[in-house]
Length: 323
Ligand code: Q46
Ligand code: ZN
Ligand code: ZN
Image (cartoon, rainbow, N blue to C red; front, side, top):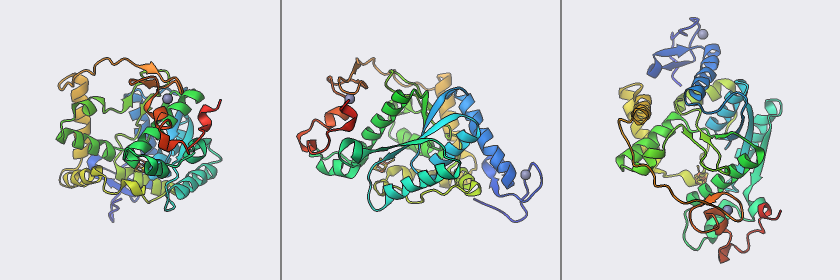
């Protein structure tokens, strides 16, 4: 957060707590705390993410973005519930992040949230799963598969209209840069603030913070007194997106607003049809016989197939499937 001596709030003239050259705007604490939810609220409406009467599930990790998103949606009056997935990651990461989520909910008058503990539910934590996997599956790809399955399941069972995640502009711009540099047409075609539901068991996914700079979210969390986990998941070390974020920060330093412009121009070009990506072929989907989520290969989805492997026999029996 850049606070310069003498910098004044554009709205009231009080000392500013943040200067945002990307918006040519400096604001005091009070007006910054008004500005952030208003901007997020506009983003929700602009991309038609969900309606005021919808039930929304927020995926919370204990980090600043997801906790701030939960806080903002609650302040905006949405019927929002948190979902924390305990991945069982060691080095204190999962334990601490869960504590942050619990403490956040308590200090805000007991905000509703659910916890799904991967080890308790399925018999193995994410690192144990990766260790057992004989096919050398990467921890993060297994983790992604398990998290997607759980989020879709909880959203379906709980009747949620959408799952909101805390991806901010820096995340989105970094992924966009990575996909553009590799001309990943399929990924570029799918990258959007809203992923509609294509099946009753697949939840709509929305990113209400997609136009918020990471720095803006850090400032919001600080000013709102949100106590979040500073450490990143140990498995995220070396992720390529970190490098792209650094590059984009250099660009932003030279040309304030560059990140926002890069992302918004991409969305506009897609919307107007200036750039087009191949339509995805209609693939035949069927319902997984175990969990009901859609699958394109066989009668079991990738998640359910995971537990069928002989090396996973010690995990489970999965509580989810017992009913
Ligand atoms: S939580 Fe899971 Fe991430 Fe950790 S193990 Fe990888 S995917 S880095 S968002
Ligand atoms: Zn002010
Ligand atoms: Zn399944």
